[in-house]
Image 1 (cartoon, helix red, strand yellow):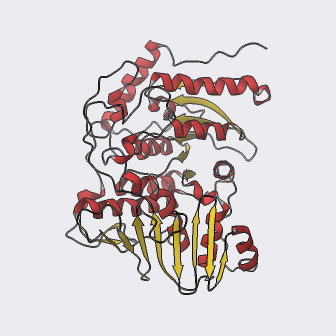
Image 2: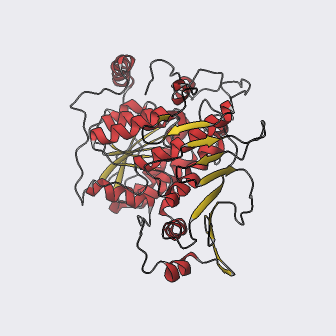
Image 3: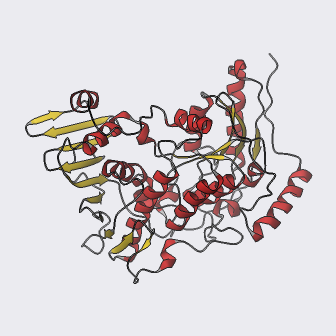
Length: 447
């Protein structure tokens, strides 16, 4: 068998010419692309062509999972040369070991706009740092591509609203990486709650972790092979620090998640999982809280409370707070249900059940409310790309969950109660500054 050779970026002159044109467009409006740049609609049995943007640990995991599906990876992108080349090799090795999957035909890019401009790409998988999520998503949607974007879907509330509008405007399919919606124990827990098995729901506790904080890291020496300006992108420029973007291929999750300029702390990181399930259990996928309260203690980093119109509260905590596993726990008038990855507990009176499948069989056989049943987050996305329906963690789900997380961070940042209008997606209290909904974008980027 002839050895497959990874294809690198286009020639320097070709790439320079494209980027010069793209930069000129971006200065005016980064996400207005020529009408001819549109990905073709995919049929039910078509091979979906995909590109992967941001090749850190999470997207390497996603790449491995998607490679086993009915897709062909035609592009990978990262601002770090080593990660970019490593991702390209993963795809090349996959095709070498799986000749039945067709010929290798993947290219690597340092600038995501080159991927956006390709008409032959059906969908993109985005796993960059959070501050890039919405901008790349909006560009992909505008170009006619479907999107799988890691959670949290956006870096701020304004971006969440813009992404929902863009999906609707361009009639695209978007899946958020809140993959717990495709794990049976979480679906069953929410169905138990929604069907009144634990009585009237009163409160929920989510073990999430700390809110974000301003970045105060010192400057580290810069090494060649990383485009730091492009990594920072729309965020305020600051000196390089290796904790934000470790060089090369790494097997951990970098610290940028902790800092407000780039992420949303654990509140957005794991909150986009557990708070998402709380929203599902409350039946609030298209809504949210009416009030978010910071902890009473001025320097506390856990204990923020979201209050819903029906009086139910969801409390963010960094500790167990009475929970057995540390995921999230629903408290009702007739029982409790706690769920985490691979862990489950239903308590009704003196009865305790620790098998989700048994609880489903005993209490949900004739349930009136059945929730979206996805067995695979990746297959679900591709299935919806084929039939053009909303996936289990659609833009509506991802955006509203992200908004909840951002509201909690705002309550911490300003140490005040936030009054919120979930129907109008804006502050219900005039003392809250509308500027808190968005950020100052570094030129030429905006959302």
